[in-house]
Image (cartoon, rainbow, N blue to C red):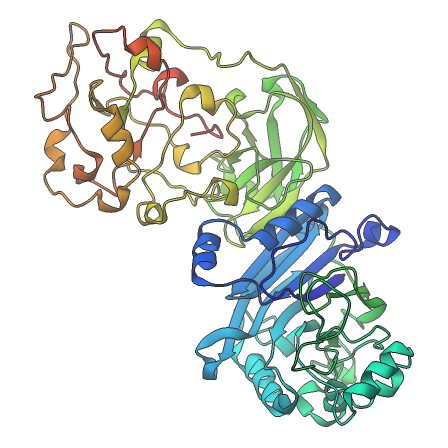
Length: 614
């Protein structure tokens, strides 16, 4: 397990963090879990609004750097400028369960989150482990305040379940962050002399945290490796020189990493013996700072631990069976078997991931894990089976992994080994369509399609790279923007909202050529889409038995404004991009789209097949 802590001082991330994470070294091959704690991430109001819509820059950086090494983001939690990220190798994901997060504010008497602690707790191979990232009060004289805040964090953070409700109830706790402990008594000139002369041991006995570990009951049992690296605070930004400002702050080891093993006296069995899980051992292999990073006035600190469990849960909750290669669409069959006691949900799904995926929602396509005999398979320990549709499969050659995502535990409960997909690439923009559907796709410039409000989707497609840039979209989960069929062929963000087959007689509204600009602009402002109560009168089908007719500009239906459609959020409003914009200029007549039908081709708002892109 690698643990990293860094007070980034609101800085922009550096271009490379491979040395900080000890990547490209022999140590990386053996690392299974990486926990990264950041403090003072830029949390000004404009930055927080952007981060609320998109993943923050620091998390993006670490995901980008770690994914080529097969690390996947397991969990993350943020409290203003305090962030905690936990990564693990993809093949460990089924054995990381019961994942929960918590945060505690201690700034301004508990009302402000600039100080406090965030935590991620999880079961690793059946053993409860907690990562706690803290930012405690600053300044030399605030040692007692740091003690009280830490005690508050331990008391306030509680988790669900009987396995480990409090932080100290876990089998293993990693406590790290900008703990802000300083060096007492010694003059700044002597401190700098000891640093320059590499006699750091003379500073250890005056370190406030070293003193507190032997005097504060709340720190009983916490261990730390020797401080064989220079104090990590405070530096002039952009340099390796200690503070040269007028304040001339004394150097200190503010950034620390500690751990605590649950006391053997807790939960003794019959005869005073430890339960069968045995003794847990932790060895610190590395504890160092990284002077090469100068974007902040703090230096990052990293530690690598070897954790020895007495036992290991080696059977995943879900086992997935798949062929070594998919060279034909009919080979895309997935068989899976759920372990006894597994909490199956109708919201579970199986994702298809490229090797090197970043997080559980970073899939290429997915299929719902809903076989008709799912409950019977679970009870009798039989294999269930699902199949990816041809449209959902990636074209070309590549290595992929299947993962079973459990909605109950919000984690991946089963993965496969990498396997090959080798499917021929289709020509750009080509798709099998019949003559009835092609005219609408080519001629129609802005079609409003009313979709049935029957989606049972838990929104597994809520990926960071595909979030809407409009904050108001979150208010209407049914409102989505859909690209044209030409774009759908390259989309890698399938929305589960499009999974269900659509009824065949859902009406469509065609807007004439004079309106597409207006319609396209208004569709991006769904925040006021439910203002009108009279919009339901507009829902009529603009088509006749004898063939399509033109909708006149005087027809109120032709001027239907998305803001006036009063059925939201039961309505799902989809925009089809321009397909043949230039050709429309020479066309005197608009054609309404065909009625929705599960058998309609994808060229004209057909019912999305399971696992396909919206």
